[in-house]
Length: 273
Ligand SMILES: C[S@@+](CC[C@H](N)C(=O)[O-])C[C@H]1O[C@@H](n2cnc3c(N)ncnc32)[C@H](O)[C@@H]1O
Image (cartoon, rainbow, N blue to C red; front, side, top):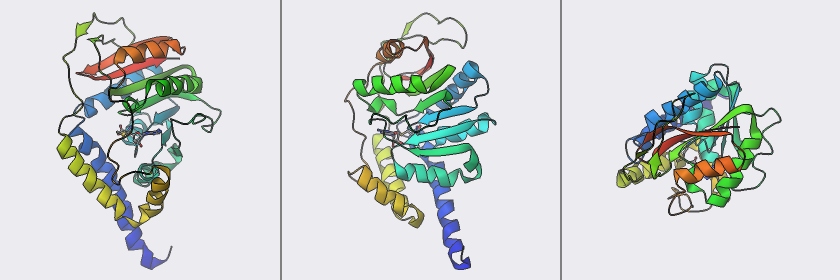
C-alpha cells in the first residue's frame, strides 16, 4: 500500500472500530436497556447447552456485537455472522479484523427463501440471534426457524434473545425443570426513543463520512432502498408473543423449548434440535 494512503486507511479503521464500539451503548442507553444481561444470558445458555461450540451462526448479526462476545468467550469457536446490511457487515469486518480467520461475514436476506443454502455443509453447534426476529412476520419466522433447524448439528441449539412480549413467564434453569409460571408486568420496547433516534442519525452521519465504507453504503442503497439513516425495519406492528415462538419452534421439530432469561418483555429462548 502506498505510504501516502496509510494515515487515511488507519483513520478509517479507527472510525470503524469507534462505530462498532458505540453500537452497543447506542441501544443499551436508550431503547434496549436489558442488552448487557440479555447477551450474557445468551452466552450462558450456549455454554450450558453445548459446552464449547466449534461453529456458531449469528443471525441478523449487525456489525457483530454478539459475534465479538462469542469469539472472546469460546476460544475454539468459528462464527458465521449473517446480515442483510452490507454497511454493518463491513464495519464488523473492519472492527474485528484481528479475528478475521475466525469469522465469515455473510450477506443474506432472511426474508428470501434459500438464505441458508450457502453456509457450507458443516452445520452449526448453535445459532444465536439478538434483537432482530421481532421485525419478522409470523410466516417468515416459521420459515426462518425451519431453515435454522436444518442447519443445526444433532444436539445443536437455537437461542433467540429478543423483545418477545409474554403473557406468563417460566424461566427454566439450565438442565433443570422450569419454575412455576408468574405473570410479567407489561412493558414496552420503546425506552428513550428520541435519544436513540438522535444517536442513530449521528452514527450514520459518521458512516457516510467514512471513505472506506462508501462502496458498502452504495451497495446498501441498491439493496435496501429507503431513507438514510434507515428509520425502522419493516415488520409487524405487534411482534409475535413469546408463547407463539415456543409453539412454532416445537411445530417445526425442535425438541425442547425453554425460556432461560427474562426482564419484562425481553426474553432468551432456547430450542434444542
Ligand atoms: C437491531 S439490529 C440487531 C443487530 C445485532 N444482532 C445486535 O444485537 O446488535 C437488527 C439487525 O437485523 C438485521 N436484519 C433486518 N432484516 C434482515 C433480514 N431480512 N435479513 C438479515 N438481517 C436482517 C439488520 O440489518 C440489523 O443488523
